[in-house]
Image (tube, rainbow, N blue to C red):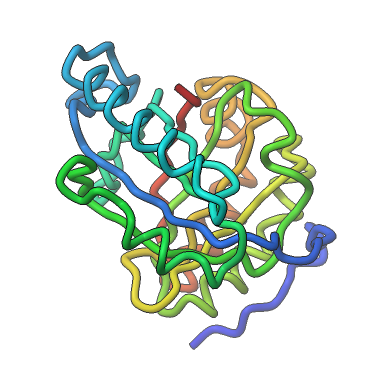
Length: 229
């Protein structure tokens, strides 16, 4: 298998110690876009969001939970295999050890999620939740293994910090088996369309370096761009 080595043209970003939290990440497909990628208003989704916000408030009241945040997708690119989750929940527990107890407290019937994953943060760049305003990216990576997924992600950080202006990144990895090797949680420096089209897709180096590197390592990325609700 191809060795994971940094490219000197895009030096790896500086990393900080892992966040001291555990994470639970849930997603549900309610009324995702079926054509253009922009997510349109949905009364059914609004109802689900209210239910999930009530669950989040209950979780946030627990002493072993730091924060529970609900997100609504605003743009889901039409990439085959992308999870069509237009409602997301991210729970931060007081410690990684608290995840099993908090996860067992989730009201499964009320949540009715398509996916619930226990996750950890192995390293990070900056502070993703310095502000909760703006657009957040949940980029779901498949990879031959979580270890390879994280190693390849590391080599992409230099391109993203230099070319797109991103100053934060919190990669989350599954505890145990998981559908994705890495879910990268990022606060974007601009709106979803501008970021996706102008700061990524319009750059030849994105296709040559980022997409080329993912492909060479057997990886695929499935982004969901969202806002806090």
